Each structure stands twice: as C-alpha cells, then as structure tokens.
Image 1 (cartoon, rainbow, N blue to C red):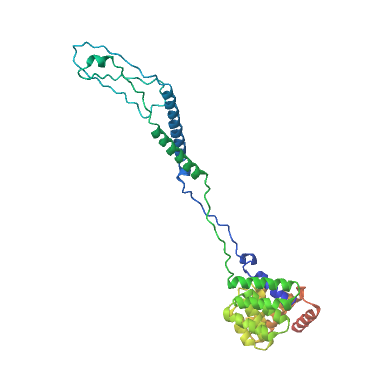
Image 2: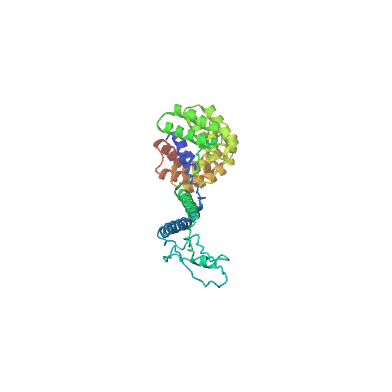
Length: 364
C-alpha cells in the first residue's frame, strides 16, 4: 500500500463534517396569516342583516296592499236637538309608521265630528270626512336601503380573499469552512479518479479558505511525499503543527520526514508531544519505539513495543523490534523469546525471516 493510500485511509477515520451538510438548506417559511375581517369571525352578523332586510321588505309590501284595499271615505250624519249646546268632539286616528308584519286586521276608522258654534243643526247634518291611515313609505325605503348596503358590505368582506405576505428567500454565502470542505471533496474525487495533478490545486484552495482544515492538509502532505517533493511536504506539515501541535497525523508524517533527514531528536520531541493512546494508533507508537531504539533508548523502546503488541499480538515486525531492543538492553533471554515469537507469527517475508533465524541461532 502506497503512502498516499495510507493517508487517504487516515482521512476516512477522521470525523470530518459530511460534505452534504455544507450545502445551505432553505425551508419553506410558513408565515401564519390572521384574518382581520370581523365578518369572518362573526358569521351571525350576516344572517341578522338578511333577516332584518326580509322583514322590512315584507312589511313594505303588506302596507302597499292595505293602502290599495282601504275602504272609501264614510259620511256620518248626526242629528242633535236644536236646543242642545254646541259640543265639539275631535278624535283623530293616527296611523302607525310601520304596521306589524304579522297582523292581518283592517284599519279601524275613527269618525271626526265637528259642531261649530251657532250652527249646531247644520253641523249635525254635515258629512264627516274620515282620512285613511298614511304609511310612511320613505322611512321603510331608507331602512331597506341601509340593510341592503350592509349586506353587500358583509358579503364582500367574506368573499374577498386575504392576501398572504410575500416571503423572500435569500441564499446565505458559504463560510470559509464550508468553502474549504467543498474544495476538499472535489480533490478527493480527483485523487480517486487517478488525477493527483488536478487534485493538488483544489487542496491548496481548501487551505487558503481554511488553514485549519486538517484533512485537506494531511492529503496535500501525503500527495507531496508520494511525489518526492519532501521539502514542500515538510513546509505544509510544519504549518499544520503550528496550528495543532498535538494532532497525531501531522506529527507522524512530519516525524518520518525528520527521521529520513537524520533529525532524530526533533522527531522524538514531535512524536512524544502528540502521542495518542496506544489502542487508538498502535503504528504511531511503533514508530516512536523504533526511534527510541535508534537513539539508544533500549528500555523505553522495549516498553513501547510491548504496548503495541498488546494491541496487535501477531505482528512479527514488532516482535522483531522488541527482540532488538531487549538485546540492546542486555536481556538476551527475553530477546530470544521475542525473536522466536516473530518467527512463529507467519507475517514476515522471506528476507526478514532469514534475519530473525540468524538472531535465534546467535542467541542459543
């Protein structure tokens, strides 16, 4: 497996935000609309207005029919004794402005008797005019017109649709972190399709938008290492460690570059500062153990190898490393056992296996 594939595997383990969460999701905004129409809130008002209009109109029609069928003027002759003093009786029938709509009895006629002084007998034989009741049609018409207008207004208020407020949707610009994620996802697709030269500018663009984007920096460093551009990879990783000194993927790659250049003590300081728990990254601790061994720190190397073997007990290379560390510390018996475990692991290639067998032969 190439170094770039290892880097990509590290990227998959990183808990980075999903690229779909970067896109801005616009919800429909629903704005509740409250009607201000009193007619909608009180439908009984319309029905009251309609009933009043019907009653007034019916009463008007009934009064007109009574006017057409009213009895003719009646003359009443009254005879009085000649010697009787003059008496004037006046009674006027006042017709109501609006007769009840439910009555059907004819209008009663009240006679008007007038006896002028000094001529009582002539007045007694004079015809008396009884006027027919007068209906105030104008008042009824005004009431009917008012009811009709009120009914039209209520009907218009009910049938007029309520306009909903307009909601404008505006897409918010992407944040620098979101822009970096988009560029990083584009670069990964290009790397997976075998186009590293096209992926590199997208990774640089991601870091320009967000220098703290760890996945993009790790991928760019791995791409540069795989291309043999080690000084550029070192610069990229150094900038990442300045932002995140304890980020293990940066520390691991940077330490390997420093070890290759012979800068062992600097590599040790970087690895120790960012060391994760051994169960989270046994290979990280195996690199540190190998570095301890090269620095002559055999006891620290042996202790670190034992920790990695607890996580992966069948790793033959690490058993070989433990044997070398124990032999360097002068513990030949335990070193022999470590070499034998490496031989029995079945994970070593032929060349490494021959080396282990030579060590076993030398310590027996």
